[in-house]
Image (cartoon, rainbow over all chains, first blue to last red):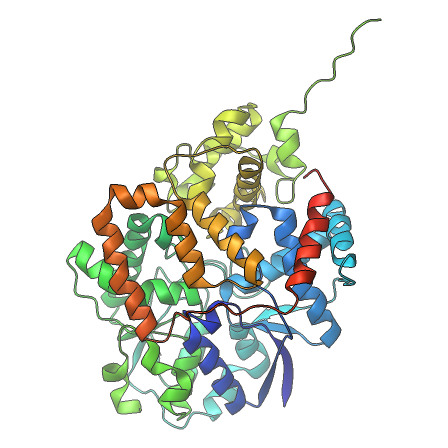
Length: 289
Length: 193
């Protein structure tokens, strides 16, 4: 059994509740215990960095301080939580003035962060700690014949906290193949989907989403996986909007890696939140369920 | 007594003193950032140009522009920059100064989106998506009025999320909200940037 402190992130409780469900289900199947960080707060995400960087670092530092008490690595399944918490950690190490100010703010609430937390992404843990080989050994129903586009999003590998290639990563490709499925070539695998700009700049984001869907289909993908909750929402929930705006007929299921793994492990669809996908994956996964 | 004038701090010195801005002086204006940016065309000034303008001390022009507010934080410029400059972090730093000093930008609602998101964190400790969206639409009612059909099209989407069980009606509140408040107040009292 491996133990980690777990940081689900706000999305995993809401728009990406399937990510939260499937992460826990798959962790259990792989003998991983994810112990939810008690009373964690939002990491601050990108928006807080654009409002007040000191405050943003402070609220991420509260999470880091709480995590440090556990003595465990802090694992998040969310790309944005992963880089936001890592960025706060590295800013505190690089900028002594910021460190002093954040330290004083934390001290006012009797908290302290010494810089000892390793913030990790779930995909990185699956790839490096568990390894594709062990994952392959747990497969009960090989996803033989299924063509999957591996979509990394931006913030799993950029700006780069030591995992995978920043522009042409391969870790998800290996995870897909460990399940018996085929990872299709996907040139735009780590290009931006527009993120939260789907709210404030919808046209701009819809165009980026269209390009990604287009590129995945060109390469014969039957479904796509992405670890990022925001990417998943954009590609899945807004696919209908893309279709009406560009007169396209996309019908590409967008799954979380943990959902696809759960299917290959023979876990119950309900435990993987498969009913929460806007574009239903039932048809594509029919022969594996 | 003769007057001693202190030279005001230049914009580049200000930006270089902020986290992420340290290496801005090393910029060779190669344009790799602009060439890598998926949305450079939407910006008033491209990323390369923004750095040139910071260097030319064009503070007001930069801070009132839409450029940084279009940055998607995809970090493609950051990983490609041959001089290890971090344009993404520089853009965040510029956003923070623009917010603090009340610069308004007309072309985009992104500042309103960022504010609404941050307010949701301050109120609950975690982001409550429904509350965040509600606040955002209140803040940007002018855009809604200008394009009511686009606003109406949001309804089926929201209903879809509700039906799929992806949009909880109530926020999840953190127990340590008071603690967070104390931390943020202390951070503010620290002053400066």
